[in-house]
Length: 139
Ligand code: MN
Image (cartoon, rainbow, N blue to C red):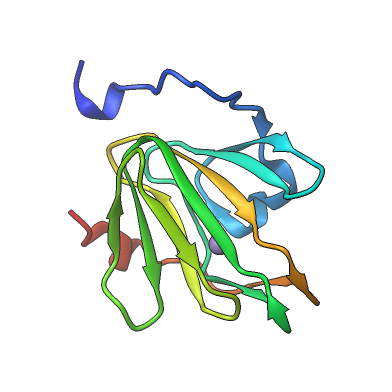
């Protein structure tokens, strides 16, 4: 199979189409709740080429987000920094109040657990999309 035809074989559930957040994504993503008590954890699955818009997890104290990569190949980028390639087993610690995006590689599915780090006054601000121009330059 060619890489862009590869699908992932999920360990965690893939869940439903992520319609609630579709307006903040380019491409199709899926969302499955893994834990809804104590520390909320969601499994996010991105089709090849799918990524979320630039966004900020605001908090007054604590907060932020952890990504635990489960399957496929993806990207994480903080504003003003190079994009970082992600593989299963990688962990990304995203501080509160840092603008960033995450998503799949253009030729591969990607899946990460998203952990909501407990904090005070947590709120996500959604910003502009990652342009095709910037995204397609990634290897
Ligand atoms: Mn995020």
